[in-house]
Image: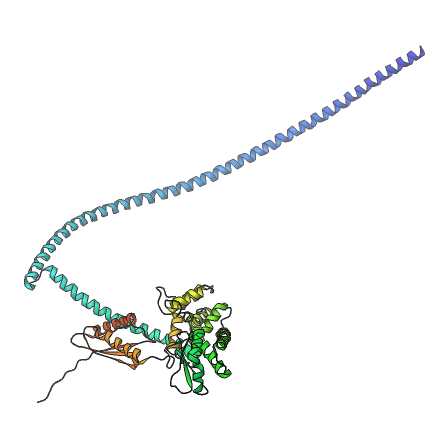
Length: 509
């Protein structure tokens, strides 16, 4: 029982403690609620106070905004009023201007009608005047127009001739001055000797007895030599000398070297001749290669293909009008490079084109066609620069196009070939050129006499003064120059002088 009581008492204490705790918590919660209520009331009061202040501020701000809006409205209203007044004034001005324009339009219409009437009267008067003029002059208006046009055509032609003469003189002076500077500078810096050869070679003999040994028994030695070299051996009455004749200069050189060796050795028979000719071919081939390399080195043109070197070396044995072609090519290379520098062109390309410009002459006896096109086709196989090929093809003016490098190479070629002593010319060809020159001049109507002078470098033409006037003589000079350029081939240039003079002759009796 005591345990039960203890448990009961414990439970009662626990219940009493719990009830006391709940009571205490309730009291504390009540106090907290009251404090919270007081705080809420104070916050509400503060909020009411602040709300009143905000409302007052909002009312004051609204009053300020309304006042500023009223001021802005009054300003804008005044601006609108001013704009309305201006628009009204402009509208009134526009109305006045429209009225003025309408009045002017009416006046213009009236004046236009008046002008049409005046124009009609003028046309009628013009017709009557033309009819009277036709009656007075005895010509119709069409005939008068044709006569007037013919007169105008004559005047225009004369004026054009005068202008052409002035322009021609001015351009010629400027071009001559510039060309003289370029050409003189190039010529002054290039001084070379002249080498003259012909199509035959002469080999000296120690005695005339050697001629019989060269002929051999029944002519077997001379036949063997001619067969091995392809050269004609001419043995005549010339003392202590024999002549080699061949159109191929390289074969002629091989024959000359072989014959010289045979004469020095003294042993001359067909087997020995063939052996010596083979050795001579090797020596000449080596000479050709060496000369080509030396020339390329002198010209300052590196990187040439070996085949071009060989062809270049062959030109050592080729002549043109008595001028050695290899020496001429070297001169043209120098001159082309100098002129290219003067005009601002690539001097390396000009130098290379000048050196190779006549390379077609190395094989022109084997290939048909002009040497310029032959050389261009050859060089095209190994030369990368198209400008160099163009310079070679164009240097004789045989193509339709003419580039800058073509002009340079052509000018350098003319300087090298046209300088005094550079080339020889046969008497027959020289006389033929003079005759052709005078024939071209005499073919023009109004020419009385013509004289080719200065070795064909100038032609003077006397015209009939009653047939050709001063302007006609100018036109004739230009036409003769054009015909000479189209029909003749000549080195350098030809001066054409047309002379017109009137002579008054009377006799005192």
